[in-house]
Image (tube, rainbow, N blue to C red; front, top):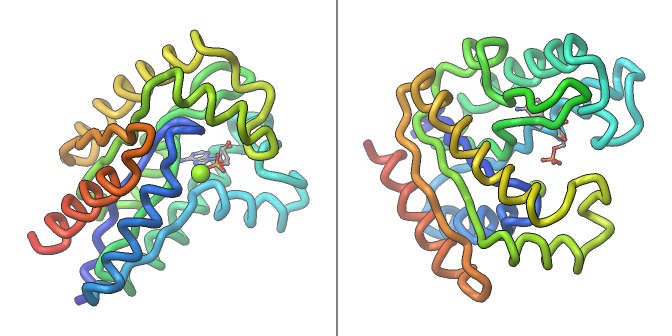
Length: 201
Ligand code: AMP
Ligand code: MG
């Protein structure tokens, strides 16, 4: 079909976003849909490394905001081009980035004009205590500067707040999936169903 539709999937580190996405994408492939998962940070990292600005993904958010904006725009252009080849492009990203100047929107007037085919926002959430223990379990992936339980609660709130503005800017509905401990399959099914709904509309 190659609809070029883009679905934004967000969730703070530790909600289990990647696992839920993988489940849904496997099932989409089995059902004959062509999809691609794109991690926004990875595309930005490639651009930043070409320019010699950073050595790893955690350095991106510490760059000057102006610099991040440039990378953010370049990434959006590449992602939009790529989306044209698929039924659906699943964009794994963040609604806010913790910069030196505070939380800065991951989807905003700087990059959204380059991503006109966003049709849906999906927010993956989990209980703050579960997020906290997942981060503790996997210290390699989750940075020490992410903060404690209170910051997790605050970030979950911020995510909902930012999702409302992205919803308005893209005319897209917001769907929230709760990735309960031990409930990966249920969350994956839910995600699969909503993606199928978007593709077939
Ligand atoms: P991740 O591996 O998904 O945590 O992303 C790595 C880094 O990419 C983040 O810490 C941000 O610096 C950057 N990033 C991801 N998505 C965006 C976005 N939409 N806008 C700006 N920066 C982003
Ligand atoms: Mg991830």
